[in-house]
Amino acid sequence: MVTAGEVDGESIDNLLSQSLFITCTGGNDYNAFTDGIVPVSDAPAFIAHMVATYIKHIKTLYNLGARRLGILDVLPLGCLPISRVPIENGSCSGTDNWQARLFNRLLRREMAAAATASMPDLMYSIGSIYYTFYDMIKNPSSAGVREVARACCGDGKLNAEADCSATAHLCPDRDDYIFWDKVHGTQAAYHNCVHAFFHGSPRYTEPISFTQLVASPSVDLERPSPGTNRTARI
Image 1 (cartoon, rainbow, N blue to C red):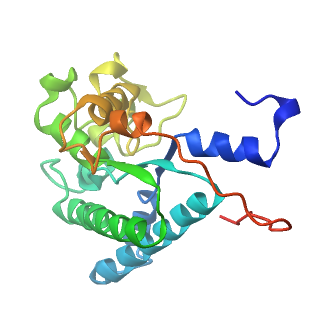
Image 2 (cartoon, one colour; image 1 turned 120 degrees about the horizontal axis):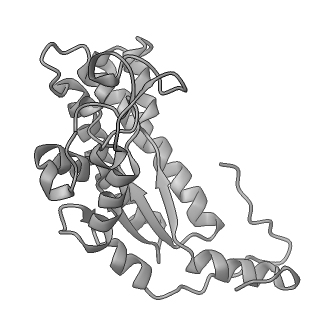
């Protein structure tokens, strides 16, 4: 533990190198498609740019001293309640899920390449929000939930045509649901995700589990040369 009187460069380096950093981004960027800013035909190039930008920010964390990194991928966007609303039978959107899978696949490939090429000593694990949610949707009882399509808080079709508010319709037991509102998961859903990342099968984490990640040995960071300001803008 570092106290106020001990905060110096070396103490901060040690703290950073022993800490677990969790990053999660990408989902909101897909509003560019739903809002008509980016045509779906440009999805591959747009998603490749998203991943490249993500890797750049991960390198910034690395340069600041992060050595243990838990990265969360993008959930099955096509199965969000709001994504199901336009579909007559309320099923998942295949196009939206394809875009999410493309992002997740590129993230794994580019992260592995970047770690090998320019981030020695980095230990990381990619937790699959996609497959944890997908498996809960396909087999709710195994996850201890009942409702996988409707939002707990909202209104209209699938309780997903209005934002969650003080006047919205609220489900009787949120622990039965995997979606709190039209776009966000519930605490029950993310509890299942975290359990899978630490104790689940390799389907949910790669290249190592979160249990292996937090147990990995600490790395002593090289101190920068005198006068060097090791800061970065994210």
